[in-house]
Image 1 (cartoon, rainbow, N blue to C red):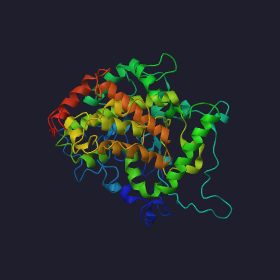
Image 2: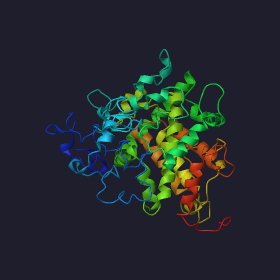
Image 3: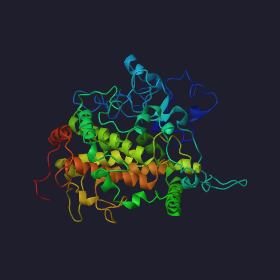
Image 4: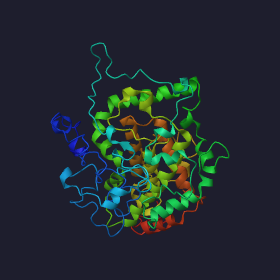
Length: 464
């Protein structure tokens, strides 16, 4: 029994097989279909048919099997019965991805087999039902929301430690390696998105987060002090954190149950939501798929490097009463990876004029979209703040995916805002966003040019 959006123990209340006593197969070591290491079709990085950055079979032109009816691995939220899922090849079982996947990671034999529910999430933190009943009873609160750890009351202040990382991601706690030696394990080195990621990493002096000699992009990122309001190790920092935790409690009360099935699918991969909203597939628009792969691969590198710099602990670490129904993933909270990648994907896609016309920013009294500009995101201010309606279907979707992580209780709002800001700055640096790019990523530009041919413009250049 594999949990998914169609088989949710939270949805109908009748799925007694999933967690009940007779279901001895659900959590034992022999049940390789449920959350365990050999379940390569469920959410994991070695699942090359599903939406992850190294998945160059899912988005390239000849892969007509992706999204088709028998391909149960293509949409993790609509899984086939466990018995119908194909076993991974022996080479995949032996190796891994170096990225927190379900088979173990890094060099073959390097970290050993590690059972995971999904990316960087141990099998022990797979979904469990929490009844979201907020009535107090028998002297106990509904959930212990008020019992919170002040990270700055700890000595030393509470931060993410190297041992807190998923073993397959622990290399991110080391000094950044611009050659991506561990990150590249088991990837197709010739795939355009991997080449783009390597070119981006080679320009790390332009974007790296560090304490001294800050890079140009890092300086711009930190120009928005609001997203860093949690940082001061004093009463002001704790007050900012408390306010954010209160917001997450409200989202848990008001939204979590209603959104839970959607959050379950987006937790593993958000790409299917872009595909659904834009109504295309890998056979008709393979380079559009590869453009999203570029966003995933570049976004993965910068989000992890920034997470390793800021080392922010998860919200549920400070407030256990948030009780996320699964996870969170074993890497730091700030910035949100879902927000970073979703916004970067939206911005890369909206760099295609034909996509911008259909899904871009619709100004007041206009009936065709425009491409975003960096001034829609920067400088920081009320007009460019996270959560403001930007009148764009794709930017709305990126916001919804980011907000979902708050509804789940695994990210603070400032994590989501930081991911959005980081994505906008990376997009601007790599593709210009209305000006000349400052980071040269030739492979990304090639993919963008080919994706542009898949979306005929709805208007001539310069006309609304």
